Image 1 (cartoon, helix red, strand yellow):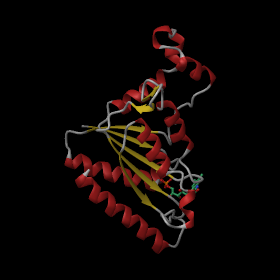
Image 2 (cartoon, rainbow, N blue to C red; image 1 turned 90 degrees about the vertical axis):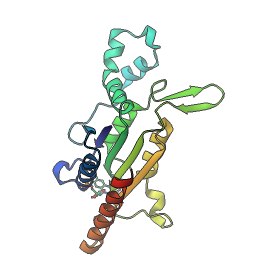
Image 3 (cartoon, rainbow, N blue to C red; image 1 turned 180 degrees about the vertical axis):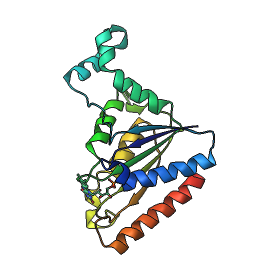
Length: 207
Ligand SMILES: Cc1cc2nc3c(=O)[nH]c(=O)nc-3n(C[C@H](O)[C@H](O)[C@H](O)COP(=O)(O)O)c2cc1C
């Protein structure tokens, strides 16, 4: 089994989302000793986002692509190959300004590609191309709380976005675990971390 771990906090070793994800993956590795983990650390090693040349090379049919076009798209192709060959995907992403870190958005801009991870049927519209057998877990954290039913719910463009964009490519088996309230009182902060721990502990035996 191959686990792709994508991290995106800029806080590296100090990151709560990285810590929670590393603990979760360690538990998975105990459960599945044969598993292989491939780490894509976007916080420390961001990938380049698409530019004009990228968009042009991407729209040229494969048979007509020049070696330059293939070079321009090489990073994107490698990132897509990484997720295509993964059985499970773990994403750690703190909320930044109600959304995901820019490094994760650049990554997503590289992998959401027509004819690679989705297709467009002239009549039926968008269709996913990634296998629905893949499982996805998002581990997130935020200063505040964005619980459903609260006025802040509408500000959460992190979890709904990841669920939608990966679901668009076919990864509909989705779980999210969040350590909220990290800028609240120590008691609330710790309570949220403990809840996230418990949720991940339970998921590590059932996922
Ligand atoms: C640039 C930046 C923007 C942030 N924006 C938000 C935000 O919009 N809403 C929120 O609740 N917390 C926000 N936070 C707080 C982080 O989501 C929170 O501290 C989280 O626990 C950090 O996770 P990490 O330790 O994995 O980096 C922001 C933090 C940073 C550094």
